Length: 285
Image (cartoon, rainbow, N blue to C red; front, side, top):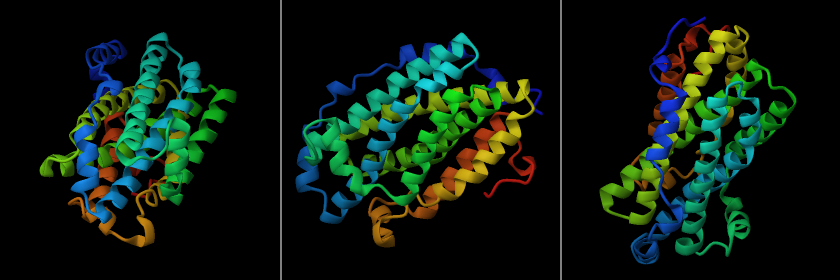
């Protein structure tokens, strides 16, 4: 059981203050240059690959926004509830940003519902399995607000979905667009999303550290959740027809994504005071 961790260096009040300082407006991003480049600069392959990738982000942001309410209810401290309320606002803002891109740049749908419907065929089997588990976790948390169940829920949301899947994808998207000076509106949005996600992940690391310290059953609960979900995460970024050009056309490889994600998860577990190699039967890194 951890006695101290890197998470002890931050406070929930500080994380809340960072939210106030980092506010931005998804409704004011200018996508006019993005629309011109999407139609005239991107190749057919790049449009297919970008639509595949960005659709998963759009649906992911919509899902996490919908599923955060039981987390707020289950958090044991008011400061934790307050921060989680700001995070729900962030997730909605992210979904609004990606939704605007789909409608105004890609031309997919006329409102949020139709844009989600138009892009749903892009979702991979692995993506669906991970987010079905998030739906299930939210239902479990409504019935069971114990610290071990909350620790599992935070591990799934903040450490797997945000730190292991979303953040590496955001990093490579931002790098590839910046290198070619493409999609300035989306690039601005991704930068803002990434800053928000860093704050969310820091909260998740801190809360897991606190929960594990307070209840020894939290650590094995987290290990159980990770053993269940990690096999699905490897299938999230399997491109259509196993065509790796969906990734390599933007300057990175599947191996880059996987190694970045695995490193991110291991680093966050250690920052929370946990040792992946000693979590009972171990984790499948």
